[in-house]
Structure formats: C-alpha cells, structure tokens
Length: 428
Image (spheres, rainbow, N blue to C red):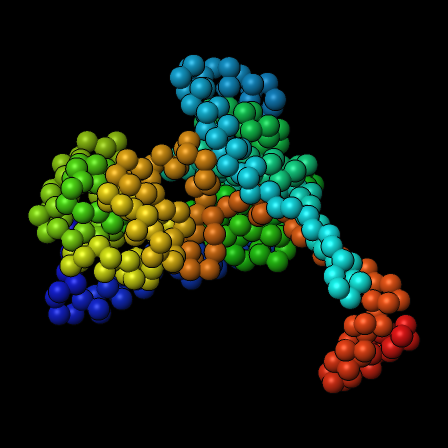
C-alpha cells in the first residue's frame, strides 16, 4: 500500500525526510557492470556491440543489419493510420514551434572603454539520441530529442535504440522520419552510449548524447560525461499532484497512475487539504489499476513508491514540493498561478484542472525529457541549448588596452603570474 502521511501527525518531519531521501536509482552493481561495458566497447568496438546485442537483445547484428534503411523509415510512416500520423505530425509541429522560441541570440557590442565584446552561439557538430526500446518504445521521445537538435542546427543526428529479437517499433521509425533523422542504429543499453561517445569503426562519435533510458543507460551517461556532453542523468519518473477536494478523484487517480505505469521504481505523490478527497483518490487508484494493461508495473510502483499526504492548506504543501523538486508537478486548483509563483523547484508544471501531465508527454510543446531525483533544484529539461555552445569574443585597440590593461597587470602580478603580466604590459 502507498504511504499515507498527515502534516499534523507526530513524526511527520522524519517520515517526509525519509520519502525525500529514498533512493530509487542505480546501485553499485549497476555502476560496476557499466564500467566493464564501457571498457569493452572502448577496446573492442563493434565486436563488443555485436556481442552485447546478441546477449541482451537476442539477435545477430551482422544478420539483422546494424542500421535502419531509408525505405524502412518511409514504409513505417506511410503505414500509419491517418489519425496516428496526424497526431505525430501535430506533436512535431508544436514541439518545433516551442523550441524555436528557445534559440539564443548572438551579442556584439562596444563598451565605454572601447572594448568590443560579445558571444556567438553555434550548434554542436553531431548529437546522439538514445531512444528506449525495452519495456516500451516511445516515438514521443524521438520527437522530443530530435526536434530541438534540428532547431539548434545540428548537422548529424544519430539514434541508437535497442531492438529485442531484431524488431523495432514502426512508430519509432515513423517519428524519426517526421523529425528528419536518417541515421538509426540497432544497438541499445550502456554499450550504445559508449559507441556514441568513443566511436567505433561503424558508428562515428558524437559531441552530445541525450535521451532517457534505464539505470544502465543513465549510469553510462554519468560515467561518460566529459568524454561527451550529456543532457542529464535521468532516473525513474516522478509526478507530484497538488489538488483540492473540488477535483474529480478519478481524474487525479489517473494522473498519478500515468507515471506509476512507467516503471516499478516510478514515484507518484498526492498532496491535498481534504481528507475525504484523499480517501476517494486512493479508492479510485485501486479501481483503475486492475484495468490497466500495465497493471503489474503500476501496482508495484504505487505500492512501493506512492504517497498521499494530507496538509492543512495547499500553500503549506509548496515548501514540501520544493524539497522533492519533482520531475512533473500538477497544480489542480482554481487559481494555479497563485501556487505556481511560490514554486521554486520542478522540472515542468501543469497548471489547472484541465492540464494533465500526460498531455505534456506528447503534444503540448515543452520537452518531456526532464530532471528527476531532485535534480530540478539545479537543472532544467532538455532544450535547444543542450545542442548548442557559446563562444565569447573580444577585441581591443590601443585605447582600450590602455584603459583596462593596467588593472590586468596588477591582478596578474598579485596572482604571481609574471608572463601574464608581461603579455599585457608589453602592449601598453
């Protein structure tokens, strides 16, 4: 059964702190396994990829093919029903429009000392996108990763995705075709991330790796950061719902289960100021779980990591929400803006009773690749900026270096760096 807490009860602080600090991510065994996999790919390249694919996905890459042909992508797109194709294209259009507004502007100016200074933004040369293909296949993840890279101006985009028994979900191929991704590799897991970072004879290295994955994928990204750029180390999915008693309990139960069904380690938490509503939501969850095709996963997640927390006022819940810094936060109230202005830490916020988190997973526009594990305290969701870097520049003439150079000399000498000082002093 899920955890039930009341802010009025003795021991609440300790129980809530335990909830905040509960670890649902990779253990030391995963870390050791990933280290061995990365070493194997670095040393043996494609041979290691073939061995791991045979072991974990059950097929021979040399027989099934290492990558996906253009004809297969086009056939997958053309084979979609009209409603499904329209849905993917609507999602792509909205995601592109949202991310276009994120593109940063170059700057170039001359200050009062006569120094020209500014910054120039450019896309990375190549990006690797990890698309899950194990427990479930997510065409939405293809769009959410590929479209920001395209908007940024990345010239080469490579997808890696596991293909159990050599099969790949046609929706993933269709989404790749809509997003304009031409390079798709039939490899997954930590070994695929290693291939993108180090490069092999077949797979050229990339500059940035993004996209969600299991514990091994997340750990591979963590270990390879510095060899390659990453978006974030993503953990199990999370949702926090702040709701009053005016909501439909069935709606809120479905919202909580929308994350519970992802993985047994996912977390779903409800804050409410209405005890009767809390009971109604708990009962609705119990009614809904058996009807889900994902009921086994949802049940394991809800029982192990779900929580219903009773507070005196919803405003009182917000500091507790900030401590959780959830991936997704729903504010299911009449005036969500009043609560939203008090929220400091959340990956993405869904405002009002008619804004379920699930709509953000697909067609709303903002990215659904978001920080988990309390990382929203210091990081943001995937954006165009993850595929770009900024180069600063400056230019001085004689007047400018005479204006600011003496201060540079003084600081260099204070730091005990005489060559620094001389390089400026000689120009004065």
